[in-house]
Length: 304
Image 1: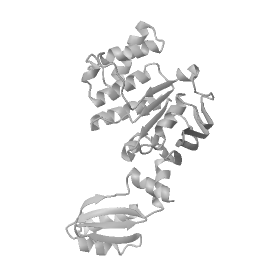
Image 2: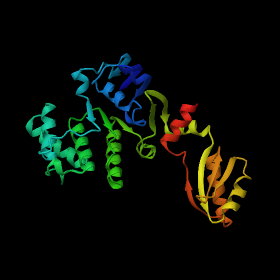
Image 3: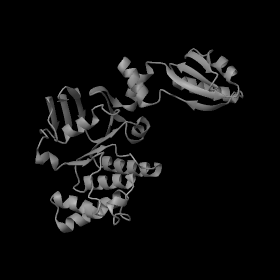
Image 4: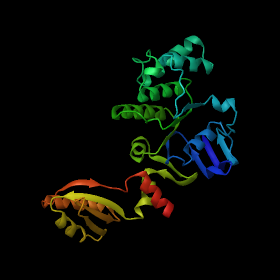
């Protein structure tokens, strides 16, 4: 559905996207990256809001820039809000449906369907000015999907949602993906992405660092020792046992935090070893992996 061929976009001397080549098909694909990574630039290129400085961007085999044929097949849920605050959520989505060319009766029908899908049917009569961030996110998704687009682009859609709302939102996206739609979701939070999809495009400072499923991205991290921090009432005994394992690179006690930091090249074997120690009475009361986050992924990949 979407193809980038050596696509770059410059803003004066600032590089928004740098020589990116990739293909995005049906299902949920996550654009993973911190602020300034190039996620929004990529979305703006795909939605035809800007042109690439060099290279090509194709959507359904066409140049999306100022192309109504492509626009009709896209739905966009932007990160920022720009609502007419005096309108109700329902009235706003109806107006968006009419702007998309739907007739009055068809617009009302599809709007109600979309509101039910995003869980806003009971609250859509309230003015937008009184909406929470999570409610605004749901209304933005409703307006993006009322014309049944083949591609949905969602910029940080989980911001402001509580845990239950996030789970419900993810279920909605999964249902749309099962219908064969292509859904692009931008995020900077690794664990959220892992719950939504296995397909990831990892961006950093405009460059595509890695592409593939979660396991292939993880393999890039696994080339480096994982840091794991532990708490245990028998901390020195725990450290003594850990250094005996051949897959442990180092073990160091932090006396101030009363924690043990272990570096291991085989995290799975290490966790199996902790389970065996627990059976012997050496019980770990806290496990944290500082490397299990996007920032560490970036650090490792940039260093590589």
